[in-house]
Image 1 (cartoon, rainbow, N blue to C red):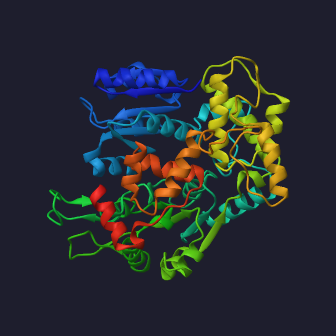
Image 2 (image 1 turned 90 degrees about the horizontal axis):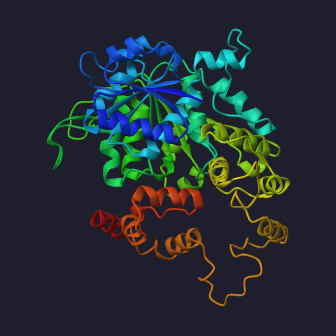
Length: 477
């Protein structure tokens, strides 16, 4: 069981965080200050330290030096972006803004522990001897496509060239980007990740480039942009194909000149940033259609890293599923479990449109819901009969059917699942509604709408494609 130390002077927050982590299978210790943590705990025995930035006595960043090789996650208020970035430059592995979403916190903890194994874990894995050289961290696979990817990462990482990571949604593009950064000469510096699709078009430029006080209504103080925050390290732009045209032009100047200018400023600032971009879209086709700047495409398309979809990875699928099963069993404190023959058949024949992320969620759900040692395909949420029917339809050149075999309903909407209904509603109304209006009708946030689009593979209508669409989006905000 992974051990985590929480250092937070507010007892309510500390207790809530401890309970959250314990519910997710972690062993948690607490401290109210740096001095208390150092006096009562052996810091090097932990897999992760989560600390508030502002503590009585010494600041939480003091733990970075005292903890040695143990990763430190810093909690800070949203308004303290500069302080958070400074803490990462001091060696913090990441930061999270308070108040944080529980899902975001658990996702960050899982990622950090997976990417930064503690020295004692590495020694245990190697039989207690000296640690072996670590390869491409966080990515596994033995199929030819993955082996080629690993070799390309090893060659690309030491350079400072711009990298474009290509792959379907859920294949692990951010993991590849982090691996490139970690094995580069900037590996000990900050990596700033930006999801271009999750930030509203009206805010993306100020988020990337920052702004000066008084640049626009509400700009009560100057703010550093995320590109400037990545100075000396790496900037990862995920889903760059969703970047609005105006932001594309400013980004092109940053790439060409190595400088940025905050909104409302007359002075440019030199920055030293390595750029890694990722997308699930065909940027070359978008450039041909005029939806993506061709000059920007040629600037970012220097070194390509392609991730294969899960359905094309052969025996890797079952290997990944078994590794995920073991991890979730240990994380959730369950008894050892195994996959039934039908579950193995379902896993290896299902097409996995959500790729590795969908497989991971299916395994986690099955471990939580299963009461037996053997996990069947039903617990994975895979209809084996429907999978086989769709394989036959695919061989005949027919589209897969979302309906269960044998359904006699005369109403085509009656047998739709919530996901099917969501997909149909978005496809039927996205031409007449902005993203904000769609989200309001569906009763979800814009971020949730975007995440479901990615998982279901529903392309997004760009708000900038028409002036009316842009006005509608602004009104809905």
